[in-house]
Amino acid sequence: MACAIPDEDIERVYKTKAKLCQCNLQHRWLIDSGASWTMCSHRAWFSHFTPLSQHMRVILGDNSAILAIGSGWLSVQMFANGKWINSVLQDVLYVPDLHSNLLSVSHLVCCSAEVHFLGEDCHVYDRRKSLILEGGLCNNLYIMKLQVSGPVTANVAMFDSHIMDISQPSDCTLTMRLTSSFTSLDLWHHRLGHLSEQ
Image (cartoon, rainbow, N blue to C red):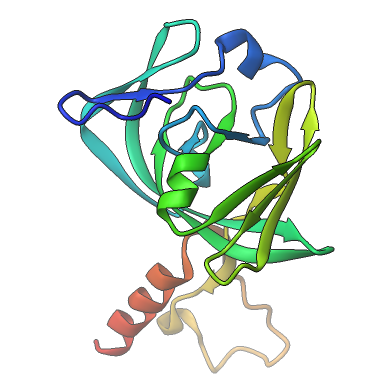
């Protein structure tokens, strides 16, 4: 099996563009024994993201090339044993032109997971031999039951205390500006800690 070539910035995927485009796979996760790295085509799905200083070529099964332009990790939910399990995919390449999202068997194995193909089923086990992810065969592709966790939202009401006039009647209406913010809880807690120190 081909894998990343150390002295060149190349990754390999043994699916062709036609294969990746079929069945509307842009929001699905395929498991691929030919992919040398786990790859995602959605920038907005990354919880943490770092642009690559040098873009990496990804070679598809038809020998066409597309670019990986960043990497990071994603907060996900994996389905196993009838329930969704919160997890994190680390060291995921961002490949905007991929037309799907790929879980690399070799990448999972490097993270101490085990991948078993049983007929039309695919099971992934963690290092403790616990089942953490299930998938099944569809149109000759193994599609995994994995979804990206949605962003945490916070509704924040802001107003200036100096505009409040205690001489006004008590039934006056306070007008506030309501905004929605999409960010990680780590950033939110860091910002609140910074404000409390001022």
